[in-house]
Image (cartoon, rainbow, N blue to C red; front, side):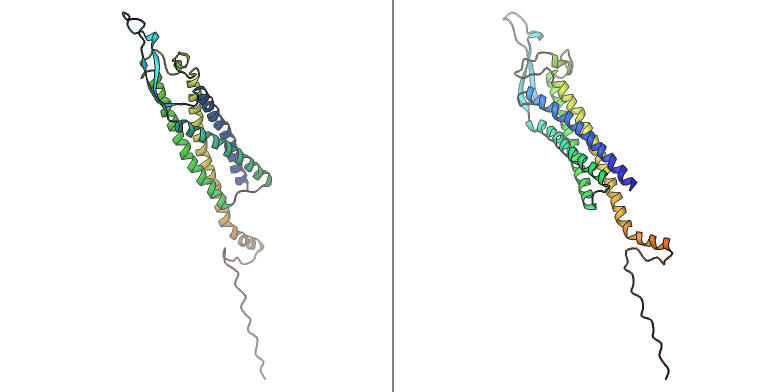
Amino acid sequence: MELDRRLLSAHCAVHALSIAAGLLVVVPMALNGSAFKGRCALFSTGYWRAETRGADTEPSADASHLVVQQWGPLAACQFATFVGIFTVLYGAAQSWRGFFYLHGRHDDTLFSSFLTVLLSVCVLFLSGGASVLLSLGLVSWCDTVTDNNTRPYSCAESQSVPLYLDVDTSSFYTELSLAQASLWCVTALWLAQSILAFLRLYHSHSQHISGPCLPREKELLLGHSPSECGSSPSPPLPSATPTLLV
């Protein structure tokens, strides 16, 4: 029973951490989507075009501006946001449920524990895929902004450089990099949730298997002859009645 409470307490703590990590994914992605007017910067393609100020002058780097050929797919940003929202909602529900179980001193059934393991593993793969997608998309956007690292500034510094776009790019790197780091934290927390859910399932299964053996241990303590675990007691044999000799 003490192991049950420790596993349940650890699971509640991981759920609480996942709420904070999920919010750190959702809020920056929402701010970035608002600043980019509903467009997705991930996997966007474009090039830098230099403007000529006169017929006899050469193109100047100061007069160049970024031209976005195609904005990234909205699904790339929405996928990361969906994983963050689901993590927050699931973590809040499971935290309340875990604290309720701790107060009531009981745990999930065997079938419910199995479903928790299955769901945790599925969302683990989803969050891992979203983390890889967000990381690759940010690298692609940084290559576009820095012109494949040929500009005199880094991707982090480019948010303070005027890109002459019709969107607000003053904090895109801060928002996307924060969402990226938080999403990898969410993936790590889902891995911890999967491990804890499996340990709770294994412990619940062990308790379920050892349940029929408890009467046998009680019989041993009381000095009675032990019976086999899980077998029904055999009925007593009828005693032979003595025959009367006449």
